[in-house]
Image 1 (cartoon, rainbow, N blue to C red):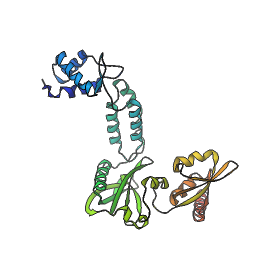
Image 2: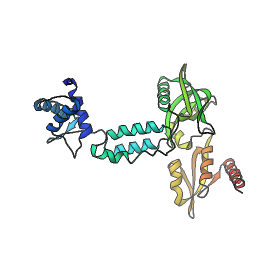
Image 3: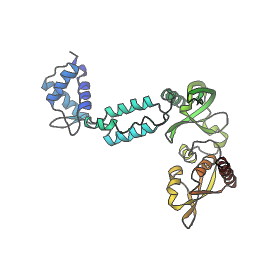
Length: 320
């Protein structure tokens, strides 16, 4: 028989596993669970004292029967599970493990429903098994403001990850974009750039202090804002940002907002079309414009418009 010093923990485990607002447990049922699950004999009077203390501290609720107060509602757990399942930079086995943990936090009668809804095994998750460990080390380096040494990895033609080159970078932020995690850092290019964390196989914290963003030439007279950076770099490409003018079908303005947000300036309206201007990464707009060429036309800058024309001609020739 187990000692009674952990009885309150056992009671909580029972209530998390077996109770809900619709299905509260009586003292008799809790006593039975304590004996069956933990080989512990408890009197009704002793149990009442424990339940009263747990209720006073906000861990449980109920009068005729009790249940635990859950941190997350079922709908909140569903949102978390859906979000985790969509993250491609987390290995499938870790996704399943995380969703099982979320499932255990749901009310008993909803767990079966929960486990059938969210994880899609065919989603293209990374094969990099070290993502969680790598993110932890990078987070530590960011907190300590230290440089890191990272070793990249790339897929070969057979679909296997192979180690690549090693770089020293200054880490600043970890961000999520389009179901992938990125490290925002500065390497040897002298500017802030993104690197996919699932394409890092190894990371080591160095003793040398990182170069702060405010010390980078480009940002000495301009405060770097990560929110602004994310809006401008929709595909997480590094490189130049500029004011871009586009003509878009009015009915498709939502497709633009999905990618660039609402931080744009309306310049003019024509029949069925709207002309807007947005500050964005040139390379990102190039690929977006090719993708949405049926609904959007880049008007300026001329250099980007010419590049899109050349890209379209190249694609056309490829399919002749």
